[in-house]
Length: 206
Image 1 (tube, rainbow, N blue to C red):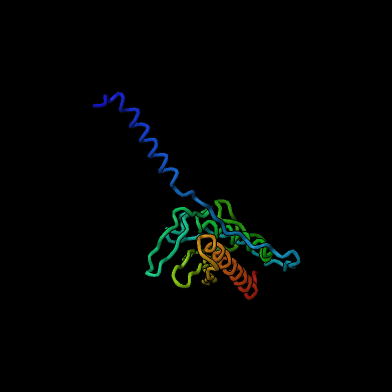
Image 2: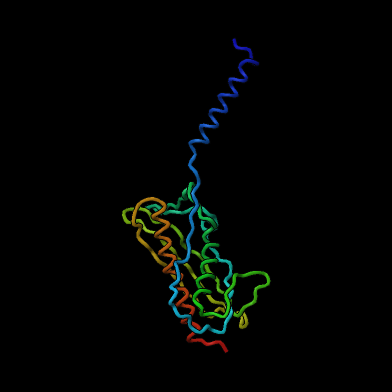
């Protein structure tokens, strides 16, 4: 029988070997982001509407308030890519992108995120319904955003619209999903900006 004092170092070495093997086999976490497309430099900025917009914090199901990438199987089961994360939760990504998109459009006097000291004429609320990948024979990335405009002075909702887009995946793997979701998000943001501009064109501020 091996004395326990002699066996202890051997057990410790074996334990360390197992831990190192487990650590070595784990997949590294990769982070992804959605960005605004480059703006055309020759694009003339129209006269801004005399309104100040505040972009509120978007609501969403719990899975879109975490930063793991989400995909939906053919049998409607929701899963997450454990080794792939967004740099921020999708709700925060969309909030920041909406602010940047509306600012760069040049159509509004000011656009800012909702803060404790933020002041504005209208509050843009949103609910992110989908921000994921649909797997199956025809895989695609999809986004669905419900938006509404709240008149702060009147205390009422004056406009609401739902924007959605689906973009087929050009290849396999998570990078292809992210690229397709980028295109779908670009389409949604452009439609949202146009929708708000159309509203203020037909409902001029006093």
